[in-house]
Length: 367
Image (cartoon, rainbow, N blue to C red; front, side):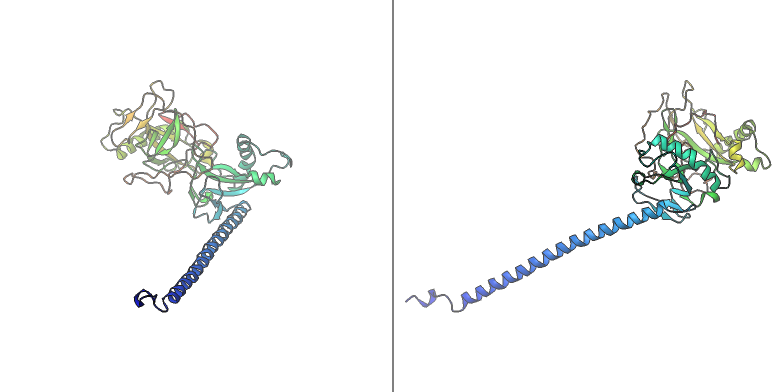
């Protein structure tokens, strides 16, 4: 007989077995619970994604079907999140009407390339936009005629161009707009303190002044205050603006000699067409010509301080932002005087597909 001390205690094996069984049961329950939770999370996540896609598709359909006077907004370059907003809110596109091009393109016609779409929107949407604004569209103003087109809708047989107005940069990116176009000044002006980038010898998108740029905006002049009765020709505009812009240069950069910095005071002009629809404002600015007068020289630094004027043309930059993508807004310096009434600095007056103009470094005869 084994000594009592070597015998297993009575009931110990039964207790251990019970503990193992209970542990296994609890583990199984936990496994089932965790698996169920993970499965439910996947189901929930899938459902959420599907609901988001459905909501996005619904918003897109409503945006493309929006009537004239509606305003549309998106944040993604491909416009996949396009949706309708109140025109008092930030938006990129104001719907002005539609143009049917089914007479030009049959049901089997391929989706037209960008150049052809650009030509179509100018030919078909410009009259629609002008009618929408009761003949008051500034052809040289900051708002440009555009259209919403979709290859997907085109393949489904849709031959309707959704015409609208927007504010593009020289690169084709879009600046936000606040308010309906009919209630806004269409003058092609920028906020004081903004610098316009440079692309080769030409004007580029707005940038901060510590980067190479073509012009620095030093103020805005309302020609309507000086010429309240009739349109002044370019000679009379130049006479008035030479004095006004020189005075603004002194206010903008007190004690700074622009000529010693290699900078020249410049300004814009307003055409008869722009004047007739109410555009009266022009920008005063400073820039520098290239030594051979073939275009604008790159300037780095604000006219308020030290500047470096290049003697060679700036590099030519190919746009890296898809046309129609929201632009990065450049805000003027906090100390800049005479802020304009518009919240963001807006786009250069060139359309997305056209090359930037080559204005004289002394005057730019725009719209």
